[in-house]
Image (cartoon, rainbow over all chains, first blue to last red; front, side, top):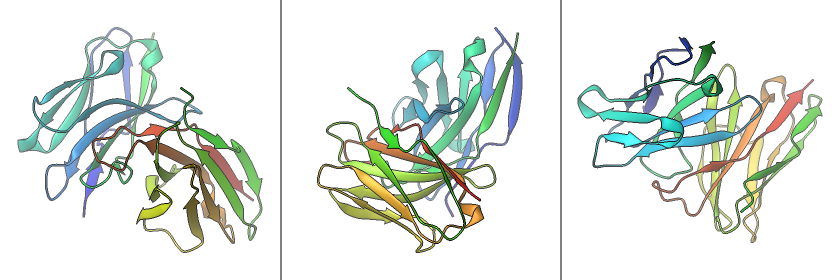
Length: 113
Length: 114
């Protein structure tokens, strides 16, 4: 069965520190991969997406993600976290339609001052 | 350009009732998807519509249904509500159902079933 796993339920980092959120997928073929962010009371906002080509993808708000086929991973990174980055982050994948994505369970990011 | 709008934003119902949620996609978008988000199950795909046709359906009972109108607005209906239907229901729109099209999410409708 197709699945997306985010191993870390909750991560706490200090403001200004670097961040890495993990995502692993299990699909028959390499899917399209996405990272979304959800702030309290809000819908999901797309941070970045990977379809093919360069395995390092740049997104909005200073985020980037690296696709590693050998590890079936698509980890999200940010060099220096800001307090406003505190939110829940979801990794998602699809190989059929944009609207039929499989989501991970999410990672809640807390930023310490 | 206005984003995806969902109405109502909050809803309280009792078991056994039915509910209809509405989603207006971004102007020009013809694909609408619905997701259920709960603390226990996370984000789960409900259905996807394109040009008034349901293209995909998730693993939900028949009590969950939806439709899309000619103006691309979509509604989802849940009949005979159960306590477990309490969730945030998210709608997302994209230009087409193509996998590479970006989905834009609305703020959701928070449904509480008492």
